[in-house]
Each structure stands twice: as structure tokens, then as C-alpha cells.
Amino acid sequence: MRLQFCFAGLLAALLIPFSNGAAQVASSPTATVTPAVSPIASATASAVASPTAASTKLFYKPPAASGNIPTRVSGGARGEAVDAVLIALVPNHVALTTQAQPSLFWFQSKPAKAKFEVTVVEPKKPKPLLSLTAPEADKPGIHRVKLAKYKVELQPDVAYEWSVAIVPDAENRSRDVIAKGIIKRINPPGDLASSVAQVGDLERAAAYAQAGIWYDAFESVSNAIEVHPDDASLRAQRASLLQQVGLSEAAALDKKK
Image 1 (cartoon, rainbow, N blue to C red):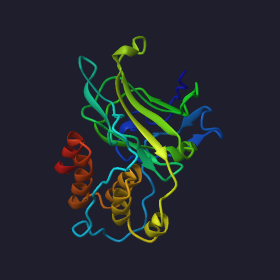
Image 2: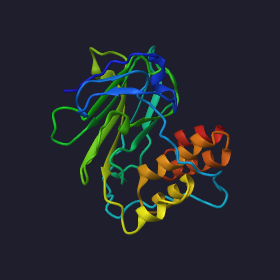
Image 3: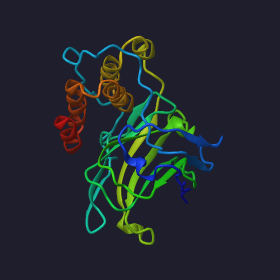
């Protein structure tokens, strides 16, 4: 059973990539959430100097225990209301974070005249940890949702499934366009936490990528892009990271910027 949440404020703001917003959140992560505007909010980027993208390269090294079982699900549809592809921006294995409240990212290829839904599910729990809805998925591009905005915390060593869906017909959910990914929180290995504490976003992204911490690497480079939106070299770095895990369609968007 999913808990759906209604939005007040600017309805179309849900899917604006890296949009700013504030939310009123209940004390429980699974309690009713009434955002004042969009749930898709930019992370507060670190105060860093202009990144040196030319000298820092992002190379993602999958964790040794990632396994060979595919976990990424992408969806697409062509019709009157929906002619779009949804992609969870994750590798095709159980991807990691060191954060209790990371960001989740996805790509939407085209606007859609349909309801949109974001859900996070904990294994063996009947209720979603988080369920957000908006009336229209009308903004293409790369999007994010910050779990911290809704006081949602991931527990260590639990593999959560999260999904995004375009819902053209609420009475026939078999028509949904769905993308899914898996996220698992771990403790930072070795001295990783101390090594990333005093560096900029891009250097932090490189360290996380090398350590196989996908979500933190992708969020860090995305934060750098938010601080320096006109820096094409940063977008090229993120595009490279996406291509390394087979997400060429989303990577192409950053290459065009």
C-alpha cells in the first residue's frame, strides 16, 4: 500500500531539475507529508572554489560485493499522454551510499501529461518509507529528490528499492512507465570519511567513485554543477560517470549543455 502525498504551491515545480523549495514534514518519515512547493530540491552545495575538472577525473569502481544480478529497471512508453523514457541514474547492481539521507536521481527524456510518483520501499515493510506525487511529469531532464527534506533515514546494511513512475491512468497501473534502483547504506570504508571532509565537491566525487560509493559520487559532482552551472567540464565529468555504468541517454543531456 502506498501513501500518496498532495502538493500545495507550484504544481509544475515537481520536476524542475535542481529546483529550490521548502517543505513541511511530519516527525515520522512515513507520516503525511505536505510540501509547500516541490519535493525535488537541490542539495546545499559545499562552499568550494571553482573545481579543477581538468585535473580531477571520475572513475567508478564497482564494489567487490556488487554481484552480477541486474537491479536497474528503466521504462518507456509511446502514446497520447506519454512519449517518454524514465531511467534511474544508478549502476545495474546494488549501489551504495554512506549517507543516512542521500539524494536520489533520475532522468526523464520528454515531458508527459500524466501524474508522477516517487516511492522508497523498505524490505518486508507494507508501507512505503516515502511516497510523493505530483499532477504532471511535465519537465524533462535530470531530477533529484533529497531524502533529508522529508526526514527519511536509511538504516545501514538494508537494500531499499526506490522507483519513479509516470502514471497515465490511475485506474490502470499496468500502463505506468516505471524506473527503479536499489540503494544500500554502508559505513565509510577505511579513512574515506576523513579524506573527503576537507576537499571540494569534485575531488569528493572522485574519491567516492574510486571507493565504489555511487550515490555519494553522483551527488557530489551534481552539487559542483549546481554551484558552477555554466562549467561544461563539470557536466562532461558527470556524463563520463553516467556512461561508465551504461547510462548513455542521460549522459547525452549533459554533453549538450
